[in-house]
Amino acid sequence: MLMEKSCPIPEPFRAKAGTIFFLAGLFLINFMARFILAPLMPFMEQELHITHAQAGSLFLFMSLGFSAAQFGSGFLSSRLTHRKALILSAISVGVALIGVGFLRSLAAIFPALVLLGLAAGLHIPSALATMTAMVQRQDWGKAMGVHSSAPTLGLVIGPLLVAALVGVISWRTLLLCLGILSLLAGVAFLYFGKGGDFPGDAPKPSALKQIIRLPSFWLIISLFIMALGGSIGLFTVLPLYLITERGLDRTYANTVLGLAQISGFLSALAGGWFADRIGPKRALSILLVAGGASTIFLGVAGDSWLLLFLFLQPAVMGAFFPGGFSALSRIAPTHLRSVVASVAVPIAFVVGAGVFPALYGYLGQTHSFGLAYVLAGSLMLSGPLFAFALRFVEHDQEGC
Image (cartoon, rainbow, N blue to C red; front, side, top):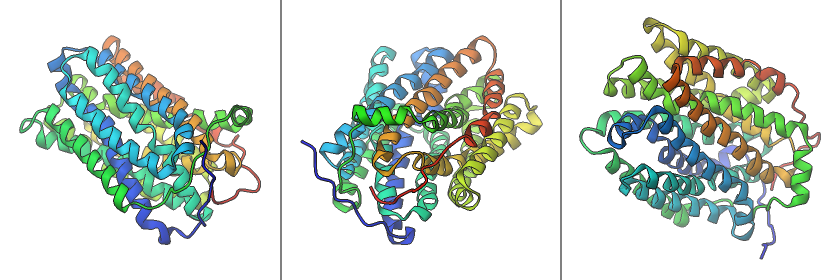
């Protein structure tokens, strides 16, 4: 049975900063639960006896579950509330990750990762709807910047945790600890979290028809595919690239990789201000061109320049997502906003963070990871063509 919607009154960012940071904390754990596997992959390859291509396909299976959950999240949140969907996501992620930590075969890990993706995929649509409903539109970039900084912070913490702890504890124990942390975060939000106490909108056929007829819907998907493929998708195989193709020591590679992602975390915080300052279209165009160029150089740079582009590339890509989510929230009327997020993001994610890692792994096995990065960077250079073709709704509204 659908619930009657009672929308909150949008307030300035500073009035809702506590809730925004709480949501960002949930997103951080949600993200790390999925992408801690990237720096762990060399250890998993050795223990499970899998190839680069099989390693890349792990993220494809997880992204399939993630995308399916995002698409169906509206059905769930329309019967619960966005707040309850966020709690369910955090607790379910913890349970699924603990399960992955106990499994011993690749055949069993594949479906477990689908379940992990399903649990994690409930977060973004409900978090996006919650933030845009309770924060005034002129502050959306700031809210998105804080929330979007969580993945980039996860890319910092994940490799550093692996470098510091693997050798002291097993990769399985690390997954178990992270799963328990997600459980505790879900319980904490149950008792202390605020916001999202209104139902979502299920993706009704009539709403889907309106969305898929919007050219900007497909344009924003294309932009997110480029950004995800050049950030999260690239990160999934970057440890393998550094260790197996560039010859770096495992501990050193993960340490450098974690430190390099600090630039992405800081730029994500600034990305919301940047998008608010010059407008989402210009911001996305500039960042995709810069990100494409740095991705190409990451694949072809010599050893003396490699560290520079390891730090530069995530700084550029980390700044994309606040403006990207702000643009996504403006391409359709208010009542379709959460439906757009629950459809566009999963399509982009399954390609950018699922198909791209599988292709990276295949090219890394048959040719080189460097070639894969050159091809991905070249695709990103076309970003401005898509960004400037976006059309925003003329009378953008706040609330839910």
